[in-house]
Length: 349
Image (cartoon, rainbow, N blue to C red):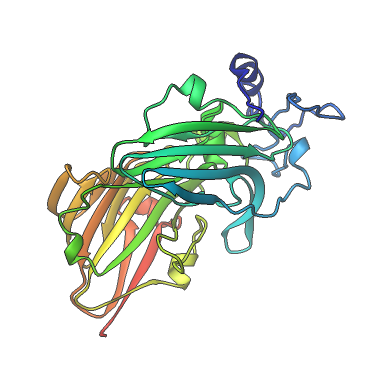
């Protein structure tokens, strides 16, 4: 296995990889050929005032989705293989974004392990130009060693203990981290508590929802100082057959989540940011039980809204008592107006 462990050299490279442009978009052309283990320095090619351009090595790149691989190999051991890749996704009707992704999804695929598991993790980087890495908020690890950069066309293998239950963010930790997250490299890992939640026997239906933001394409200046152009929700497949969407303005409105009257609903919610908080609120009900960061020890009751900082997670539970549509929003309505609205459609039976 090859590992991208030359962190010092990599950081020197990536610190300039997405320099924001001024009034005109600019591209610093790469060298004609990228050797194994080498990356050519490039600059971002987007600005808020100029037509968006994809920077050199990503022009014409739209890599087919490589499915995530997750396999339980022991009672307390899980193998996970993820791929860093460049793939177009639709973030608003007819608006495509050439996202930097894990496995062609933004947010990336949902990872589920159990409290006490050892995670054997492999990251394969098929991005032709840029190093990527993994930062799992659910584990204890030395970032310089176990969140190390993986260079183009290389792979790294690491092991992590998952000893804390909850709903955690993962993301690319390669410098500049803001650019990698804002361009799509983020997702959720759920560590299921060994003894479950106190309310498990009351739950009729479960969903996973994620909030994230989109900005001017590939524009570090806008990522750092601008306002998001879209704030969006997605749902990820918790069980086989569940829906799995990217972060967009339309999917969870055009095709609502569904439930029946009288059911108690559990939502695992995670805010990817990278910059904004989420004021998560379900219109027409009260959050009966809330577990901050998804930890059973962090139990609250009877809340109207749960505040999620960038990377913050929670488990929220509520009961739907009448048939109809229940909007799910961030109660920061400037962000709801930019897309962060989903619908839970409740049927009489």
